[in-house]
Image (cartoon, rainbow over the protein chains, first blue to last red):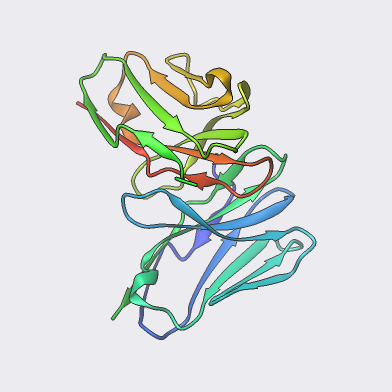
Length: 110
Length: 112
């Protein structure tokens, strides 16, 4: 079953704008991860935030985690056409499997 | 590090046939995962191995599905008596212990 739910399902922006994607989950977690997937390809890991962390940065990516609300957000600043992809959040609970959400399809228009 | 390799990339089969997919993980990774992904959805967990031991299987993995990882290296996923509902992208990923997953580019299965 899907643990995470991303919002919005699809997002279309202009190059240079910021893109924000949200993820909600249902159970307590050890960590939450964000992955990116280009069409027809495998997923690529972007960033991991642990349950005791509230914010993390990596380049143009900023992730926040609110465990009280069971939600996370991914912000991509100064977006580029090459950022066009699907973005998935994934939660790790028992140290074994990752459970993925349904994803946000981001389109960055040049 | 040559990444996770999956073969074949595409497989078209007729309903009722058996198919087998192969995954070669990153060599030093001890964990190997299989996920299934349908169009517009996120990956769904099927099973995972730590070394050669299969430690967890999803209830999605019916008795027509079997996965192996002999000697803790490559893995195979076999689907017997394929059904149209098995059409999906089958993704393999590997990791070193609890580190983030490294995915292959998947095998796209089409059952006609």
